[in-house]
Image 1 (cartoon, rainbow over the protein chains, first blue to last red):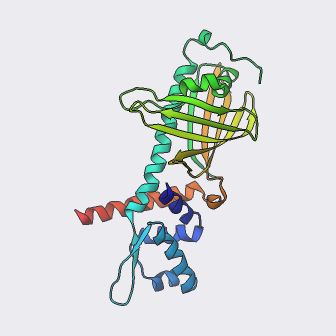
Image 2 (image 1 turned 90 degrees about the vertical axis):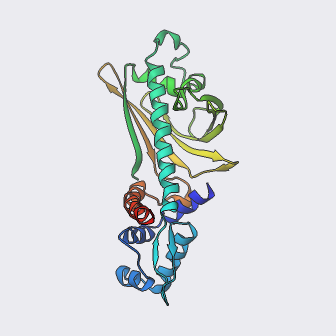
Image 3 (image 1 turned 180 degrees about the vertical axis):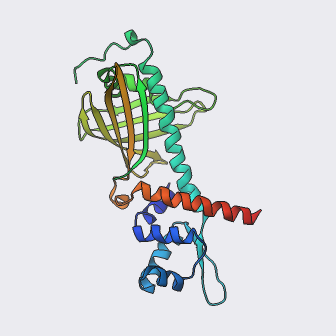
Length: 114
Length: 154
């Protein structure tokens, strides 16, 4: 859950979401991202640090550069969580409807007292 | 704020009846929680439930395999029979997860009700600016990229 919260916080920032979207097209170096986003290198680097800390991207080392790419495992944490939510509520609402439509006479105690 | 999850259901009962089933704690305990894959329902226990804006609610659920899940939050708005809003978070290992907002509307639909369930973006300050639509776009892109990477690995 701590990891999930970190991922979600990392994605709370629109620039970081754009970086993620950009990296979905393939890996990129810091200088490529600087050109792409028209932001300073320290700004890009600090965003990358947050994304890396949240496990959403990984940075490799190729000669003098450290290209960034998406980490599918980090994303999976979020995707699983969203799927869990949907499964939970779909199931709960099915249950609710089933209960609501079953023998209304058994549901006394539902008065207007609120 | 963009809705993450929107689920609609038609129910052959009046909005009043649906609202009451949703909001009376003894009734809630009977339907809260899904069924497992074998069709066995989770058992819900309502631990706190004060149907007043600003007051807390808490439910623990026992899965058919014995695992206990806890959820809690605060009622944000209660308007019988039209709608309720509440904050919602899972509790895991004693820690509250990210908080979302649940909104349930009971709209008249012929002789019955159209229930509109929505789960809205994160309410806590750390993730307040998250728009879930934004993540879903991320997720779509990620999923595609993830797939590509997986193909490379194999």
